[in-house]
Length: 335
Ligand code: GLV
Ligand code: MG
Picture 1 (cartoon, helix red, strand yellow):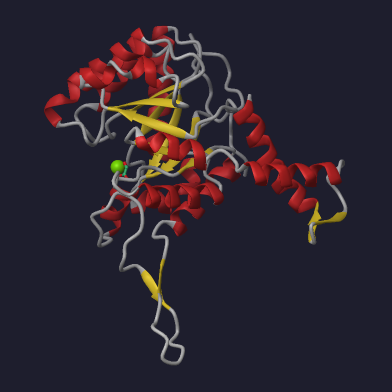
Picture 2 (cartoon, rainbow, N blue to C red):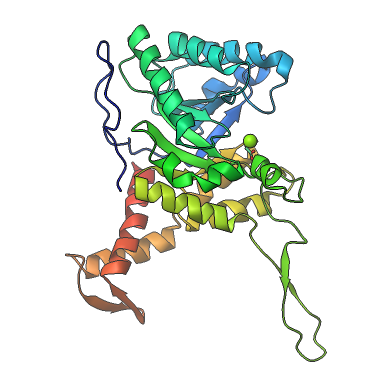
């Protein structure tokens, strides 16, 4: 079943424009800003020139006694800064929190025309998306918001992973999904205290070979969930993202985690620290050598059919499609 992009009846009065295909835009890094901190908010005008998406975070990592300040700070930064082609998102509090209703009503009323996407944490099933979809439709109609605000779900509970396909198809507002490895680890009862990345003990030992020392190969803890999420998103016509990487002192591991996600079909990741912006930019932009090779495949098969050999490697209709993914992304990065 394809994404039901006109699933819900629009509101009778004051409905925004009908839903359209998702905008094609670069979203290599979703950069998190804690909007209750004035010093960091002041950097947003500079940030807008460096990142693809600026996100005002209202949920986890914002202390309970700063939730209102974060919401007001986000509205201020939404109103005061010109975002140009840079996306403006917010991560609101989860649906069973005491803050979500005010997050939504105040933000849509005062910054709804600037906002591209609402990131909804701890989504467990399509019912969570239906609720937000309907509430947004009502708030948009009340405040005359012309452009529908999209929804991005965080996949971070065992229940959510179980229902990932239904979540992806839950609303024409669905923009995409991010893996939330920290909450997911807790929800699953995994034995790690890390935010994303691997674990030295999650490894496979190579078979013994004579007297040679045995080697351990570390595994990607998130492989299964990322693959499941990418399939659910692609088949619904929405976008898949890796989420956070919490160890800022280990840029190599961050890059490896982002790269795994990129190779598996994700379009971007969260940047929680300025050093992660360049990592995401590098990883989620295709490698020039790969682009060159992909362009040769497209040139060698102008109508996308048949079989040719390039540098000793067979290319056919399927590799033509793979090459097109890479060349299209390179064009978007260059545009
Ligand atoms: C993100 O929200 C996570 O829980 O990893
Ligand atoms: Mg989380």
